[in-house]
Image 1: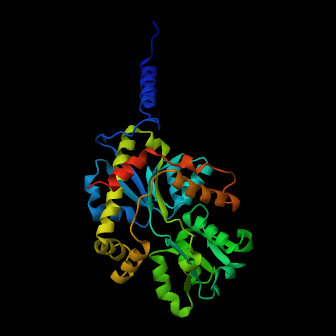
Image 2: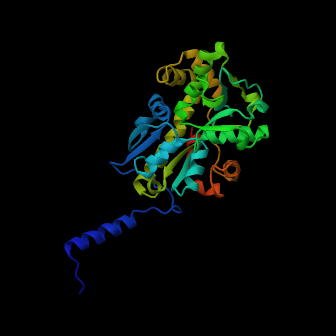
Image 3: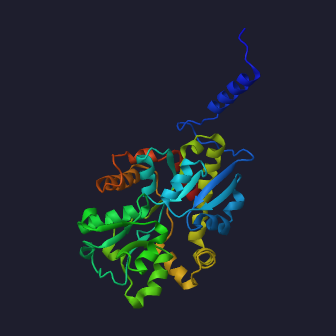
Amino acid sequence: MKRFSSLALTLFITANAATAAVLPLTQPLPATVPAGTQLNVADQDEVLQTLFNASGQIDRLSAKVHFGNFSDGPEILEAFRAGAVDVAVVGDAPPIQAQANGNDVLIVGVQRNSDREYQLAIAPEGQIRSLADLRGKRIANAPGTGREAYLYRVLEKAGLQPTEVKLVTLQTGTFTDAVRSNEVDAAALKEPNLTQYVNAYKDKGGTVLGTEVTAGGSTGLRYLYARRSAVEDPAKAAALREFVAHWVKGWQWANQHPAQWVTDYYVKNQGLTQSEGELINRVAGPTAFPRIDQALFAVQQHTADLLLKSGSIDHKVDAKAEFDSRFDAVIQQAAHAQ
């Protein structure tokens, strides 16, 4: 009879236990979160942490959740690669970049607001009043972020190639400083930075190329995406299922209590006035939850093809493969629960 040393037996049992613990993506999502399960969440601008706390959904989660604040998609991808986070909130471009670079991440949540998430802020000395004026101008670009996709859509609408402007590579956190100091002529900003910039620099010539000009630049989509290894872990998969459901309910609470959401997030967390927060919230509009279906795949595929055409990724990707469609039922059930 073949015998195992105690060490070999331990390794054999551990290896087989690890294999058994992998949840195939073809299997239903587990419904029960085991005790002691932890989720590490990559947040941006502390929006998720504030949402879960303000809405009370944090108290309805079975897993222990830790929120960490990150500046943009590329920084989050680094954390994914290091195994430091399980799930993150991002724009529409980072999942495409992740797929193109061979990073195993899957979209597990979809939300849509208005198409005014980003607007093109113009520097005091930018001298840009129309899309045609963008030709030859210095425009901030953050590869691998939603702002990059927005910029390429705006250039596409203007009939310009990326080579017909001067793209200045910057981190998203420096966009506001770059545009107000005239380091660049234009930069895609989102709230609350956009309102803060306009209020501070409108008397010096700082302005915005509004959405009536740049309409179609933003899809209004934001995603929750997770490490594939987290989705394949039965305990974390169950925790993600629960997290996504309460994420939906949190945004529904914000839709139903806009004044409280403005106070808790824009005023207390972001340091804006109540009137500024109300304006931002009104522009964003209510949060909706699109189906994870062919229509959504087509929108994401167009973005991926645009990034390929612009040289941001070096090969064609199948955007449908970025999504874990099992979470569609989770989202829709939470969205329509009474």
